[in-house]
Image 1 (cartoon, rainbow, N blue to C red):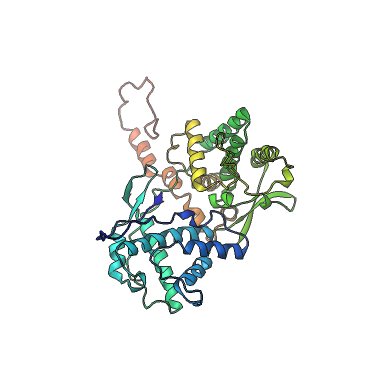
Image 2: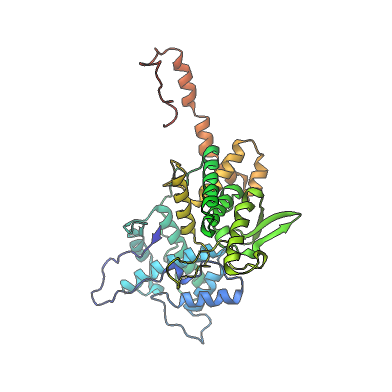
Length: 400
């Protein structure tokens, strides 16, 4: 969901309405050069509302400390999320004429109570508990950093209680083996029929997600230079969640659509495939607008839209809810369900704790071992034949 600022408790009539900086204030991809990252963060922080004017002579001013706070976060995805959340808080401060350095717990409580989020339909609704909890965490983290550098007197968010976050029932849907194969086949058959750069890129996206268990940030943040060879295997190197680097093996089922896509892209650009640079997965040129030449990294939103479109075309019942994380959950659940040892699956998923890996299989295990099946067998010995028993009837245990 795209998050937006919340309305103030009392909007001063004389205060002009200013646009909140979009998340694009930070680049989608993590700049590899630390100097470029510092410059990007400095430019983004300059857009934040309600901060004191930056003093170039004060190295411990709020603006330079905010840059260093963002830089210290463990991943670029966290930076982008926290920057967006801090923008939300500071814009509320601006519109309520509150100095953020003078804010108290009551102010944060008032802001928290009015949190909203805007969905794809552009309708603002109350923000989900997980979103509110993350926003509070971001704001508290910012104040804590300022506090440890003597740039403020208190952390007004420290004592604010985050909302309870629901359990795992709303996780991205996991596909069955048959559904996974149907999605993969449809994406590749479609690519072979259309034989376009975009179609083969989409097939590569599906293969990467549903064969490797990598997070979507791993493929949207990867470059062509991240394709490598390790111990005789083709691998993709990527940035890990929480920092650091890792790699995953790419077999033929993934390399086939990926290699075809990169070859078509290189041909369009007039270079050899091995000389191709830039994002691993890039946007294609707009067919009617020369001002949009393509070449930008795919965003998570692009990947989500592609998955839902392909899943709908493939006739999957979960098409409307499928997300990039469905690939990760499907890979883990499928492997555990087929008896692949937990340590091997944990290693593929990159989890530090095996309980995290096992948690992906919890819902599937609950359904497969449900006592409802036992009760059905017990009562079946005593029940009369159902009406129309000779006719076809749907299996009561599964939705048709």
